Image (cartoon, rainbow, N blue to C red):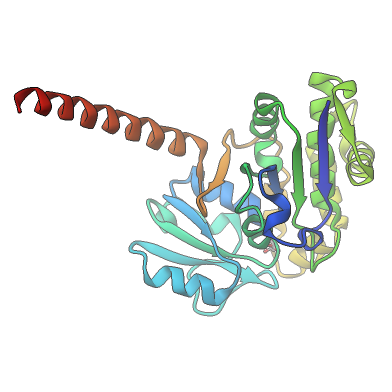
Length: 277
Ligand code: MLT
């Protein structure tokens, strides 16, 4: 049996050791995970999450071709180049750059996953890629909802429930065990966003519009962000958080292949030398 754990807010994860050696899925659908996905698909070299503004500034000093990005209260941080709207992360702004990214809840949740066995970043935009990854992992996993101001938020829990619902559809309920937080997330997902036995984008958008954070973002004029973040499976990609950096899974994979090629070349060179010696 595969155990699914769900934290309904990052504040319920007491420290970094709690997620040590776990397979983690970090969720902040409005908007940090959706923005990270968009940035990487649009050509950012990497995203480096920073817990707070001073850590972000310190990282940027030691790093070339990087920009400071992120929000507090939904607005761009003073002195930072970009905020947290996915629409800011167009190739012209971010191509080949390292993005040092600090947000109120999302990047805190990511930072708490730094000792995880595996960690992926998830939103409605990449549902299928996340579900596929969990099916391949075939092991216990933990969903960390970022939540809002150290509390529960409906949109992250609905999405956590959607991951669970998809796995149940593909792999049968009987293969999984859920605690109350997972059970309630599954139930509200079914209740709030399903239509004719499928998740429905209009219902996702409606749920956003009724959520506290959705209402707040609309009050700042970010209505388009809500619409964009409600797209189910718009982006077929899987951002992975490893060694304190977020990159698309294929970037990590191709780096690993390159490294193992280089090792082979070194070894064969050495063998060649020793013959000559
Ligand atoms: C967060 O990390 O709390 C959110 O992504 C806030 C936002 O929508 O900008």
